[in-house]
Structures are given as C-alpha cells and as structure tokens.
Image (cartoon, protein in one colour):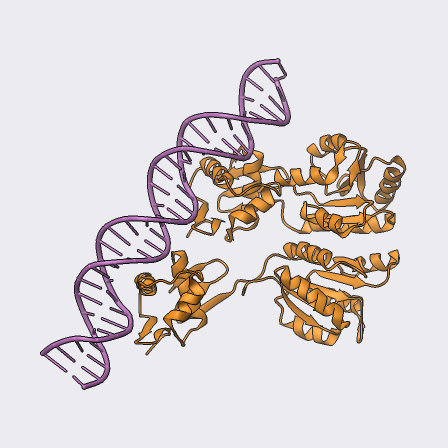
Length: 225
Length: 225
DNA sequence: TCCCCATGTCATCAAATCCTCATGTGTCCC
DNA sequence: GGGACACATGAGGATTTGATGACATGGGGA
C-alpha cells in the first residue's frame, strides 16, 4: 500500500527494466523505473527512495560517475550497480566510488530482490503515509487514528471502514461498496452491520461530525455540509 | 594497531585461509583465522569482531545453519559466505539465513577485501549496537538488556524477539513476521509460541508496559498509546 | 550421568469484537 | 396526519483472539 518501500530502477534496456521492475514489485517494493541518467536525476530530486538500482552504462553517461558526484554532495541513498563487466578492477571501482553493492549480468532477478532488500533494510524503512482531513489523521501504516492530536483506539472493522471512507473523502460511499471493501467476500449480511460500525465510529470520533449520512445513497466523509 | 578493525576468517583449506588472512591483514584489518565451526564459535564468544568470513562447508557442519541459529539468538555481526556452489537458490538462501554478502569461489582476494570493508563500514555506521526506547536499552553486540539501568537476564528466544521488536519500534509486527525472523523456517502456526515468549518477556520487563498488543495484527513496541 | 532451564504445547480463562435483533427516530410523500 | 422507508441506537450473545498457568521435553553444563 501507501507505505511500501520505494525503489528506483535506472536501466536503458527495456526488457530488463521491465523484468526487474516486475520482480521488485512482486517482492513488495514500490518501483519507479527510468531509462537514463537525466530522468533518474529528475525523479531522485524529489527524494523518497530507499535504494537505487543503476545500470553501469547508460545512454547519457556512466552511472558510477554520477553516483560519485552525488556522494560528494552528501547524497546517501544506497546504490546497487548492474554491470556487464566482470573484471575485478571494475568491481572494486564500483565500491570505492560510492556504490554499496553490485551485480554482474546476467543475474537472477530473485537475487537482485534479495540484495535490494538488504540495502533497504540498511537505509531504514519507508516514510509514513498518513491521510488527513480537517483535524483527523489516519496513519495507514501504523493503523493509528488521531483526532485533534489525540490517539484513538479503533477496532479492526472500525479502522477499515474509516480508512476506506478516508480514501474516498468528500465522496458519497454506498453501503454495497463499503461491504465489498471492508468485509470478506462471503458474508451477505442482511442486518445493519454497516450502521452499527458507523455508530461506534461516530462515538469515538468526538467533535464536529465528519461522517455525514446521505439518505438513500450512503455516507460521506467531509468537514462541512 | 590497538583499534584496528577486527575480522574473523573461518575456512578449512589452509592455503586459502592463509591467502585470505594475509590479504585482509595487508588491507589493514586485524585478522583471526580458524578452521572449523567449533573454533570459530569459541573465538566469536569473546566478541570484538566487526565481520566474519565463513566458508560454506566446514569439517564440522554447514556454516549457514550455524549463522542462522546465532541470528536467532540476536547475534548481529555482518557475515560474508564463501561458497563453491553457484546456484541462485543457494545465493538467496545465504541472504535469507542471515548472511549479508557472499562470494563464489574462485574469487579474487582483492575483491574479498573490498567487500569486507563495506561490511565493516556497514557494521560501524549502520545501526548503533545499542538500541534505546524509553528506559529500555538493548545492546545487540553484548546481548544485554537493561530496564531503568538494571540488567535483565533474558533467554535466547526472549532476546531475539525483543531485539526484533526493537528494530521495528513503534511499528506493528505481525506474528508471522516474528516467526519468520526468530524461529526456524518450518514452525507450524498451531501453537501459541509467540504469546508464550511475549508473556515471559513482559514478566521480565517490569515497569510501564512497553509491548502493546494490537488485536488481530500483532505486537508493537512503544512507550505510550 | 543427572539436573536445570529454555522452549514448546496444551487446556482454560478473559476480553475484545462483531453480528444480530428489536426497537426508536427522523424524513419524505401522499 | 399517517405510512413507508431509511437510518440510529442499544443490548445480548456468539465467535474470535490473546493471556495465562501448568506441564512435557530435550539439550547443555556441572
């Protein structure tokens, strides 16, 4: 979800880029993939990546030089180089120029995923993803909810419903949609489960009402009218 | 010479052991070299090593199993495996069992030195060997835990679980994740092993509760909330 | 070898959670 | 005003989940 660890892949060969991206994504990473140094530089500027996988040779330059320069500016995101060369000098060069690891082509994507995991662990884990509305904060990663700064303790269902309403803030969410997303696909609850949960939620979300009911259509999370 | 970085080499082939030792020594490391797991275990007991180079197969056992077991006890010194095998599964297995890097024979001693340097740097800069949360201190290197300054004696499992929770402080850690990291890969989800260990931990960690259970999701180490 | 302690297992307890039902309240349309 | 409808509310009970204590087992050290 929102708080996945984010990884950048810089590789000009499209097939390889795709294969690597797919593997890393299926390993649970959030992946950005670009084809040259210029694009990488632009995307990295925003920050937020826990690790970067660089092909050594790119259409607009050698990535080792790029990394070396950025290291001198204090850039510290872990880097893994993919290199076609197999000479020892090259390997050592990669390390001494700010690389944290390298992999020689051809390599296994599974192995790449394992190495990236190690590097990311080292870099610390991803940033919190927190949804906000008025004085309400929903931290999806930590499963925490705060209203006006105070921590609320919600049950699983309560959190699930609130989180879903939050992702659809300002929109009307129907009962069917809510059931579909927050309940297991089997239950055909005749009873008013949703109303019950919403009531408990309202009880815990003290303060100005945020969950508005739209008669005949569902609920809507919003600050005002 | 007193404060040189200290490295352990565990390799049964004498020629190779000598070659590696000489190279690492000339690279500025202080080197201890032994030929089997038993000797390694004895020498490692004293602590003080920043990195260990393990041959995969040793006369008295497979070093991967050894490292995996020690990781579960909370041992955290970076490890590099030397392996004759070149299959991808073996490589990945090395990582998931607590290895930080590996090298396939035949390898260049210069490259080995480069990798060892990286591992030692990681050990030094990476995470501090003592983790803190409120009045709780977990010294990963010494395997010591203090609460409000008083030393607690924890069993291996207890320490492993606490350390893992500590590295994920403030986050919710699921039972599966816990089992994956602190137990051998087989264990059935039948019994409540985790609950048992957590209970014992709570019993020893006197004072304000630090291990909070998040119903339906797992445990969370935190000061409040 | 024997004992002790760490660890895993089981049975049982306590509590949180969630669903259901019965009923109350408001709204809209005739 | 009176239904019909949609939602709100509150209580009770069933189910799930974690906590706890007792016990079995087994490996390591004295």
